[in-house]
Amino acid sequence: MKPIPKVKSLQKYKKSLSPNQMKIAIAALSLMVLSAAVLGGYVLSILWRVSLAEHEVMGKDLMLHVFKSDKQFNLPPTIDSYFAQTFVQNYKTLSFPVWRDKINGFQHSYGSALAAYELGDFLSDKLFVANEFTEWLFDRDGVSERDLRDRHRDLSNNKVGRKVGVDARKTGLHGRDAEEYIRDHIVIGIEFDHTVITHWRNPMIDTLPSEAAMGCSNLPRINEFDCIKIVRQKAKKTRLRIARRFNFYWNKVQARVT
Image (cartoon, rainbow, N blue to C red; front, side):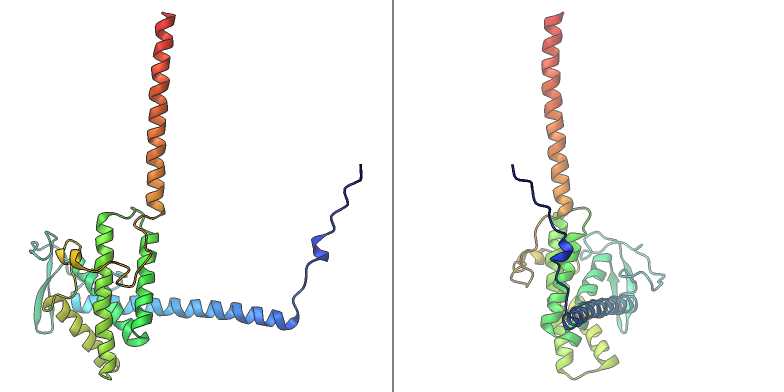
């Protein structure tokens, strides 16, 4: 029997990178890190500006909770709030009731408008589609029927916001003027045109196109937390089935013994 030859060290077969290849690799890695930092910084800037706008326009910051407000949801619900408690907000010459889902509608439409004004319609769409995927992934309660309706509503409100942002860009407005234009037109969409959907129970959601038609295809209806629930439920049923069978046969054995 022939002896097994000794395996040579992998170090002898490892090819080292040339100086030029090393420089290219470092440059590519640096570019990736810089791109991620820039994208992260931009997303944070969107979150900050949305928080400020919802505080000033809607009366309460529910995004980052950094701007203090004395507004409380302690007034009776309205028909549009679907039995959710409200408070009254004054914005310029308007006075209107506000509830949590209404603020959420403002968040999506205003954030999408800002991104569309600064990045264009396409990139704004992809940025907020990525947000939907993130919410789906980290939804610890699993994807419920409410979550699916919320998702549909968010995609619709994002589209409304992108149109406002693109229109503001076409008008040539800049700075504070563009911001005022966007804020005012989002409020018009909420209070007058009703293009911004302000509650997940709104029947308008049932008339919306599919998620794929609204630019968010391949977003599953369940996530990893749903899978864990399903596995746990099946494991529980299996344990109960085994316990029942064991108890059945044990009772038979005891009956024969006695």
